[in-house]
Image (cartoon, rainbow over all chains, first blue to last red; front, side):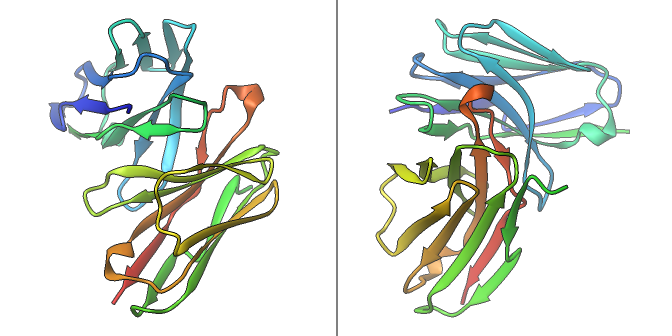
Length: 112
Length: 113
């Protein structure tokens, strides 16, 4: 059974700081790994998807890496802004592309 | 242009009632999902449909019955609602050609009193 853990559960940083969010999974037979953000009371917004054969993906100030062998992914946010404040979730399909397991989430607060 | 839409956005009902939540996607995706987000914000998959066929049913009580009339729609019907069914329900969709990148609807907040 896939288990996905995100550390830390909450993070508070001053504006402009670079930061790293972590996602760990127990079953390395994953199809891909997707990072989302969720704003309070809202749905999930896809940030980045890394295919199982890839090592990293970049979009603007965001960079996500994937190390399947160690069961880890990181989301790097450069020059954080107050608008980045949200909960960040990682998700992995395993045992079939449709059996998706979500992580426990990291709640990020960027202080102006 | 709404990609994945859900109705209603809020649903308040009493225990024992039957209710439905509708989901529609206009992305041309072939796979749709239902998720439940509990009070601790943990997201758990309930169902997955591919081309109108049920693929995954993650030990959901049989009071929950998904219905997919076509590839663009996946509705969720819930019978005999219980207090523990109170949660936010999210619909999502994906496509094999884009490595099953998921797109989510805005969610339906269900409150059972």
